[in-house]
Image (cartoon, rainbow, N blue to C red):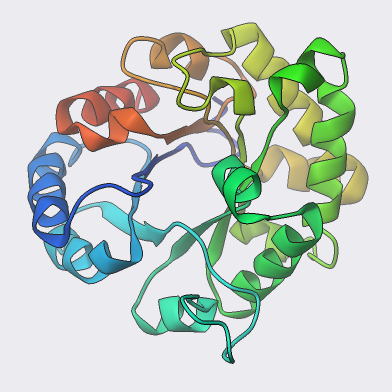
Length: 255
């Protein structure tokens, strides 16, 4: 982490978990545990949980985010949610390009870019996910792939708008598998992504951009991962569903 030039952000990605009642209970349990955090704390929850999560988080330092949005403002897109709808609810953050969206729901680098653009136009802050498959790491193309994903996703994004972009490096092979990139691997790829941002914009923009690690970060490995200069927080999956574990990660990020 480098708190001198950029924010440290711990964000939970609840995925398809928690009913509204369960979400209310979890946020209420979590709030007192993270109240003294010296980092930004976000819970990205399923759409049906957004309203109750906001209510439960009121008066706390927990911010609420969504897990996806569509690229159109409105239209015949049954089952989709637009960025403007999220903004109208008072939502501040949205995850875009998560590997599970790419793997199961046909997201491409191009549609990720369209969603990023829509979210920024609606006034949201984007948590943009990039990362390689296991085969791609074994082929030695991690750097090329993450560079390409980052470049395509940020097409049409201005240097000023980069203040509302958080990037999450999520090696696909480490999501939901229990595997984790080593701290050095995470730092290396986050550094590669930062170099891309410097090429696209400037060193100043790159140094101000928060780049999280998101491949199975948990309360057991977070301290080492967060000790690396290019790892500015985490996008937390399973551990974000347990208040004590999530709070422990926030504690490490607050040091």
